[in-house]
Length: 466
Image (cartoon, rainbow, N blue to C red; front, side, top):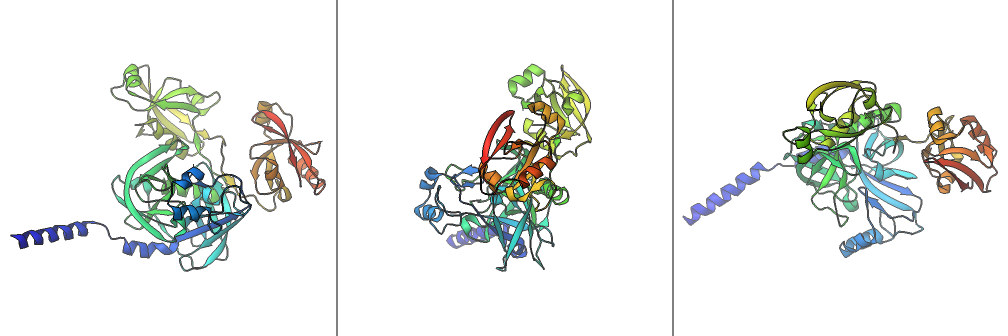
């Protein structure tokens, strides 16, 4: 009987092992297309950030002593302690999506970088240029220089993912290249406080600083997401990680590659969750949908007939279970196309056709500033565009130029930021892009000059030293 029991126990354990996935072949097939990304930028006095979360001294003290030294020490790939005069370094992951050298990663991996180096699995190190970024989705597109015979990942469809299915990640946590971690899909369509236009994939795959931007694979060896954020109280993995769905990521990639910017659909409404009490008061049998709290003036929603108090139940035939379901659906709709909304109004369901507008550029997608362009002034590190009449009226100015991009340089050091309106430089009025270029060409080198900018409706003067 004892021998029989031992046999049954061994047989059950072997059966259990046979039921678990074997990742060895999948890793061998896909590791070559995963890359390590290291960046160098000017010294910063602020706190280093990982996965969109502050990583301050208090959090460092909660880590093991080895990791405290890893992050604080002079050899740290993430730079020295806050306030250090040493150049700031960061490290992350990415993956190659095309044979001609396009690489996807997170925006926060390369944000503010002066130099980007991509290391392949075969130990090649290639410089990369930043094609463009989309801070709203935390994505960046890089282009490898002088690359040939590049391996490429296979991309799948994140919309086919199921909660509970196995997934795995390849990345460089804490600088340990080509680390493989595995887990399951914990939830789909997660909306995070920092961004409600990305329906994140939640997993329990171990993700740590350095994994950012790396691929999340399914068991078919296809990339289904980009590892982007973690929920943590210590700065390390706590069992909850989030990935950008590859369907959304590839849409952003194609727009940045082809147009240099990202457009998203926009309704122009403020929404809130429908709880049990609200559902009862509106005559719903159960909580569902997105309650419209406010319709913005001049918005597509107003033009389409939506009203405050409407509850959106369906969007183009898709049910709205939670209010967080609506923004990603709208964002994915091409600008100018009509969408059919089923709304509950006064206890009755009605259908409305709304032409979707373009999401105003609040955080904006940005194309890397060109070195020669009619709207760019390389010595200052600025990219500007003409001031639209409606914007000029709204902020009460009669002329100026809008800052659309700020790279490292005198303008950045002076505190000029994207979406600032420049109306005067060195006491000379700036009414157009041509005026801007003429004034900049005449600036005295090495001497501080004043710059008048209008920011959020208020005029301020900044000092810039070209």
